[in-house]
Length: 211
Image (cartoon, rainbow, N blue to C red; front, side):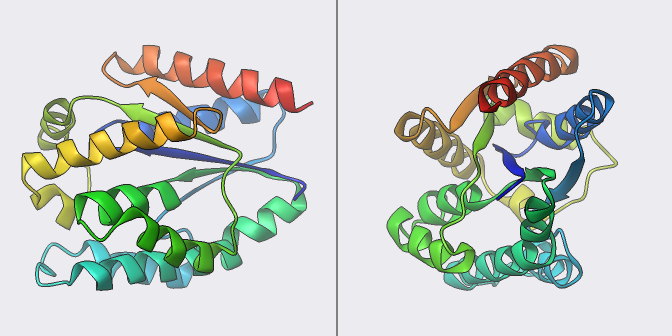
């Protein structure tokens, strides 16, 4: 691929979506051709699947159904958006990718990391990001941020109990230990300016090393 694929990961309320937009603007200012996308979603069909997955009324959704829907949306997102942009040489910044499924469905839902990984390797044909930024913070802090943000979408994950979100955090931290070169942890407990600065320094160093 001519382009570069960077993903942003983290629990609910970690601030990664806000930081991603700021980083996109900073990268464009220094001359990079950048697109911002998200999962589930990032394309016409994948966005429709997102509506099904995250609908707060779909509380009866089976956990394996949920995992399959995420994988299906991911495949369509890659075909519609990510792969064409990477072929053009674009820097693709994506809000969530495979790691989210490993953590949320594989660990927090209890399906199993290996089972979810195999499902997603089929969906992505093995494509993984070159760099993943993990925005880490205490779930209590993240959920408090969400409750104070009236502009944020309300989805099914917000309805989960606190122990679910702690399992998510622990699973992310475990992934970061397994893949320290790809997954760089960002301390998301600080104010926005601090988090943006740490993120910018991490991405800038990565891009410099790629030259």
